[in-house]
Image (cartoon, rainbow, N blue to C red; front, side):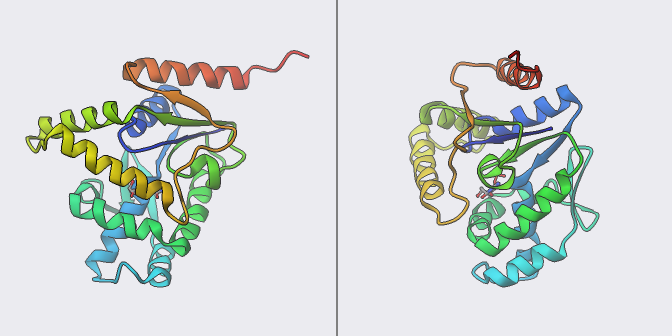
Length: 220
Ligand code: DC
């Protein structure tokens, strides 16, 4: 069974997807980490981030794998390196390249083959797994998302003002909405789950309920 979790940054997607996969004992696929991993190697090889075909060939040549909650590229653990601000910024260009998205789509389908998977990203329900048994679009209000990010930064000692976090987030959201490919949008048949005011456990509980509804044979 495949469950897709898409939505904007700050809606709590990653932590929810991870917690849900753990609860179900399923495989968790963090597709953002895959785009980040390609970007990391591209930067190490000083490739141009505008060379779409070159980046796609690079992506094709890499073995990206998830093991024990860590991300590996050609057997090298890159889980920490892919989380820097530099990689976050550069990944946007890489994820904008249609040939790269095409390679990633195939890679994601191949990783998920034959498994029970919770997959998380921007286009998982709309493009990569159109036949997923359950598609969820996780959202939260812009204010709530900005507040969460602000708190997260504060806990790392790098907080900017709440206003500037919100303004930067609005710019990113707009970029995500208007990008030519991989535009973030809910699949037509996705269930919208709004996480404002809900704890992590409550969100996971709601998703487990939705899964049970899907699994229950329909009475005629
Ligand atoms: O979720 P994240 O911050 O790790 O994602 C990193 C980048 O990759 C971000 O710019 C969005 C992009 N992305 C994407 O375009 N499609 C996906 N399925 C997942 C992530």
